[in-house]
Length: 340
Image (cartoon, rainbow, N blue to C red; front, side, top):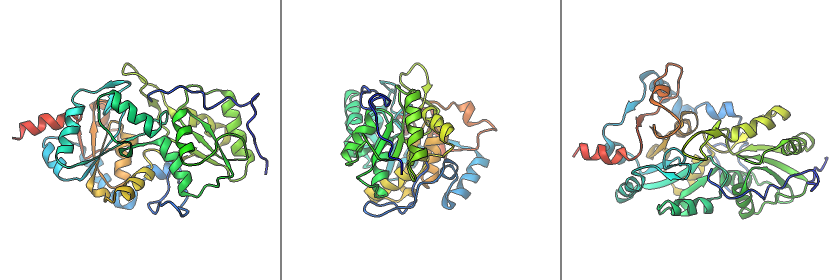
């Protein structure tokens, strides 16, 4: 086996990225300490499991319902999973009404979990961002795709004597370190690709060599999001553009561990001991957040405070229909007041 090794004259450092805001998946039999089924392709991740297929086809035909009775939805589930970008914040700006809404849900005894495809930060770093925005969120309530990449490698008993080549930023590196994986040197057994503002040709070439020349080398993507929010003013090219470059050069589909694959959903259900039918997934993206919830058998709520407009939701070309939609999560407050 060719052992592709990092060379300081060829391989740009992946650990110099500054801190910033920023698949397909194993089966539901996921668990640490034993080898799970391999992750699937993106097409398979997007395809619903049997438990959600009939429900989703009915919803696609009927269309999403506008949320009118927030209390009924709140009372019907135990856990709310929130996407972050476009739901809790946009860029570094908190969306109006978020603190009060989270306080309301906690006062009703609801478990809150925050899941993001943005891999630029570790869970600890995201905890600091929540704190900076004035939100009290425990690190154990945060699940970023950077953590998912490390957790997936643990779930398949990835050999500790093999290295991981990272195309991405600090969040992935920190989570790999916490999980006990090395990302410098060789031989390389996995290439993990996430959002990377320092992406360049040499990273593409080295990642391509690792995958092509090392038999069995894994190609793992934290997500395939087309766009991301670095600021609240505009959309930026997302991690999917970096993944697409490696896909184009290797002709190999990645194993996506972020949304919409169900890896993180399976992990959360196992960790907290909850059934997915008692979860409501709240997000602003149809093809990641809402599909993530549907693939996991959850209730779904689309908010229009992020990338998806009402026109897009109601377009005849859109086949992904959430159970409910509303303008933003603070509607929980006003809709509650309207029903008193």
